[in-house]
Amino acid sequence: MALDETTQEFAHENASLECDCAYLKRRKAELELNIEELKNERAAVYAAEARAKEEFKQKQAFTKARQRDMEGLVLNCDLLWPHCTVGSVLIWSLLIPTISLGVMFIAMEVALGWRMVTWGIAVVKGSG
Image 1 (cartoon, rainbow, N blue to C red):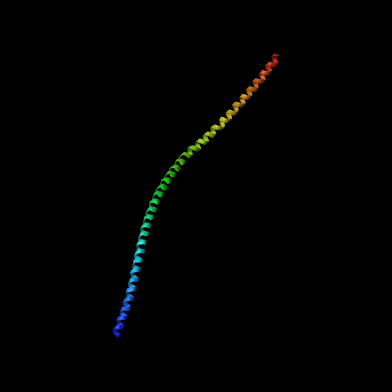
Image 2 (cartoon, rainbow, N blue to C red):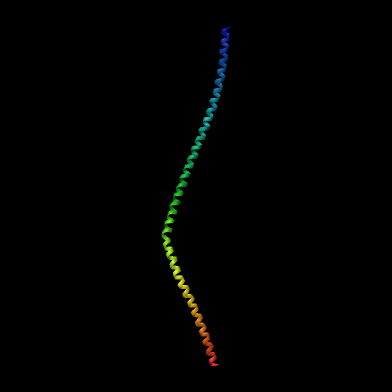
């Protein structure tokens, strides 16, 4: 009898171990599937990271090119600013005398015209 009980105990324990083994095999399959999914996700993340790095490098190169262009423009402005200042001073210093000369010329024409009109009137009065 002890042998039958021990055999039944071992059979029960063997069945329990087989259930545990089947559970562990299912669990192992699930974990392997999860591992494959994680590997695929990691590959996708690495690909996205590589694309992002490439875009960043392109944008950085574009930004550096624009910065060099802006530095060139600032240098050109720095070189041209004194000429612009001198040009504006020269224009204003020539513009004021030109306007004064023009006003004086017009005033002289008006005065001479008025003088001619009064002389003409005086001649007409004197002859009549």
